[in-house]
Amino acid sequence: MHAQRIDDDSVLVGGRRGLGHLTLNRPRAINALDLDMIRVLHLTLDRWEHDTDVDVVLLDGAGDRGFCAGGDVRALHDMVRDGRVDDVHAFFREEYALDHRIATFRKPVIAIADGVCMGGGIGLAGHAAIRIVTETSRLAMPETRIGFTPDVGGSWLLARAPGRIGEYLALTGGTMDAADALYAGFADHMVPRAHLEALYEALENRADPSSPTELVLLFDETPDPSRLETARAWIDDAFAADDVDGIIARLRERAEPEARETADLLDSSAPTALAVTLEAVRRARGLPSLRAALAQEYGLVLWFASTQPDLLEGIRAQVVDKDRSPSWSPARRADLPPERVAEAFAHEPEPPLW
Image (tube, rainbow, N blue to C red; front, side):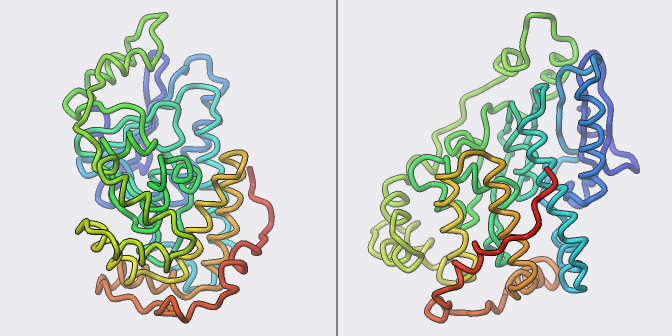
């Protein structure tokens, strides 16, 4: 498989016969994105946009563990801790510009979200023209687990999921398999991992007038029913509540064990992250475009990075020290200042560079 090629470069650039091929190549880090990788991807797309020898772009990840585990949060931790504000701004501006570029690219971008695809990986794969998952795919927007909020256009995708699935996934950071990703609108096709090599060959050797979508459909298979679809009744009931307290109260009233487990999870999560994220997803439903959602997210993430201790504490607990025991500030929802959410959305940084 082309995605297995590994060398010293963090992004492999190749392809032939009209297929441009980009492979994220940090397999030991599950291809976590850093700024250099973002810049290589962006520059390559710039070059290919007007290159008549490239008419389709394929984006995948090296190694067997996953497409992309997200942004390099350890590097983000160090930037925030050291007060490197310009570096923080540059990373998010350029990452979001890349996500938007993929969404609006003039040529079809096919993303293979095999294995782990979370956070920043969703930003790359979730906005592609053709989004493919496999039986090993595990997709998530787990930002609330580190006291943060879904970004990279995640709020745009979450806001358009069926019913209240978006609020559920956003607040819990829940993981989707292939069936869930298709149901929630994060993917378009399920292709078994064993068929990816044949798909790549078909894309390279395609004959007109076969479109990329028509070729993908040759390998598409229907997964088992979605767990999220099965759980819609209690998810829609609970996550339609006005606020986080109301959601948890409704979850505790439900008979389903999964609902009560979800209530326990939310009770231990960062109050600030939950409240801001709930508002972000609901506001995103009324936004006109992915660009507008990215602009909203940009203000929120810089507010978290510049004013909230929870982000550093969450990364410390989950990634740096790995003690899984974060000390949120505040620790209790009852102590969350009533103006906290409004402050988050009032943050107006300089305009993003896209």
